[in-house]
Image (cartoon, rainbow, N blue to C red; front, side, top):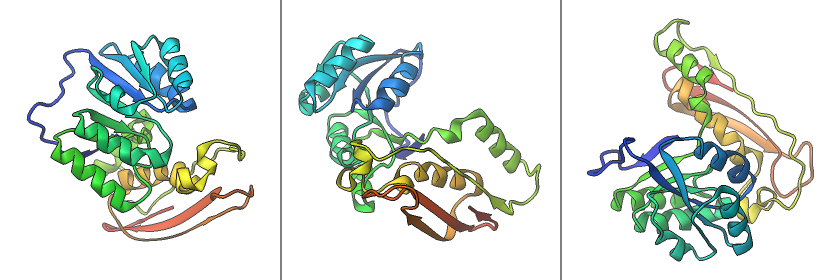
Length: 241
């Protein structure tokens, strides 16, 4: 979870009390992974659900015993929760983050943060201006093996890094999911799963000096790419793949 925006809040959230969450976006990942995991945390509770489809928000609210549900985003933001998880389609991230920040909500947003650099920059700036946290859901750097690998690297136990290799493979056939609509997703495998690998490459090897790569459709015929590969050079030496 990469924290963007203001890291020096005057009134930070401390984990000495139960935190109240809202969820915007009722896709499969929110339903099968994020919300069930959230409800296992003793110091977190689910308060409110938003979806553009009121039937879907009602379904998820009833399934996970949330107090209320909405298809009106402004009414949803008026509810009594402190942190918002945004799991909506990629093209909804920007406006939902900006409006949530203006409402004083801290935000944990799915990747990719935005469809463009300019959108992302505006989102970060609005969060800073409103003194709220903004984080991106890059979970792989928190896996115990990733944490241990990072520790080994930082302690110099394996010497200087020559290369870091990452792979992510999922067979996801084109369907009516927003990921296959370029207007909603902004791109395919690279923008979706590939960003996790970019995060890990930077996590292990540091900042990047140069990069070259390819995206392509080698498996399915769809609007978005289903394959991506890259080679990068680290500022402090070594390469990533």
